[in-house]
Image (cartoon, rainbow, N blue to C red):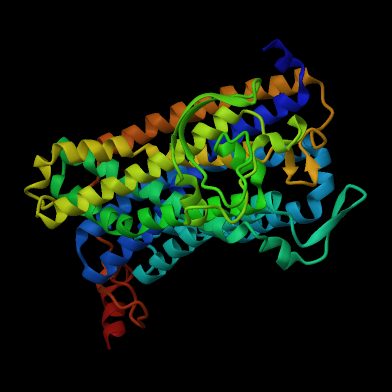
Length: 485
């Protein structure tokens, strides 16, 4: 334990893990909730139903809270590349730094630029212009996801150039951006953020319904969430399966750690799937485990026997394979288990919906279902975090898979300085978390303002040669008559 305090690389990894895990909590919600706000505001414009307008105003408060914490918590991550990981930045900066620059200039600035109009422009711009601002905010948030996942996927499957004297030289930026992992990684994260946001919104809505506060109002948001989740939940499972198949082909050592597979299973044989186990890195075996015969063959290749071998961890020297096997193994199973649970909850909710149990009158009687949605609200966060643990810890000992080791990528700093910054960030993030929980719970306890009138511009044409009514009222009576003429 005390050796950790003197290990600069371990402390730098721990600090980056802290900042990444904490920061990820906030954009996960904003990227998905932005899409929900686009849909809910579009429904208001189409139906003129005031409930949808009140939903847009209420949920946007939680959006901006998460946006603010996300920006503040993300700054240390950017600084770490130059401070704690300077050799890494120097080695791959021509590509990695460029892509992160794209994220900041193309995506974050787009989101931030139109956020003010989305929040404060209800009475200041025409409705369609406001909706366009909401669309651009959501697009910017998800464009950030694209660039970040492109950069991280490149770390998993580097492409588009080669390392020359320890430095990556880009030969084809498009090939590097569109590396083998990029598409599935982006889609997996896109659906993860959307699914997490839907279940947070659904869980909060269920809390109001369970407590019989604005039950009819929040039954509407729960149904919108459910309608979206019908598509999102199974798609997320499917894309997750495709991502696991890519790990099988491109990162066999990570797959071996995900399955705690120590011995190689040759091609032509059936592969059992380990349901639960107790991996022991010291003994290079599982001390005990429960297996499902032949299941891994079907999961990887949809066949009873393998066309390609599943390599065991013993195929690699200890220095060249992932450690913390138990963490990787159970993180993967937690992520998969949550995905299946959420899909099951959607299925049960649809059945109740078809039975008429989610009507404004009957929904308050579905206490067990409302409690299930409240329980599910934080599960998406856990699935995202455990998924990233599998993705990043499973990549070790490489920071750029097969090319650049993590131990060679850390700055040569005194361990005490890294420990000091780690403790400082932990304190700051604790304050952020307390503030977010306090203000978030305050927003939820206060609830929506159902007396808020819709903007008057909703009934006016988007383009009009006539001055707005409130501007005409300020003019003298003669000027008003002149305008009417």
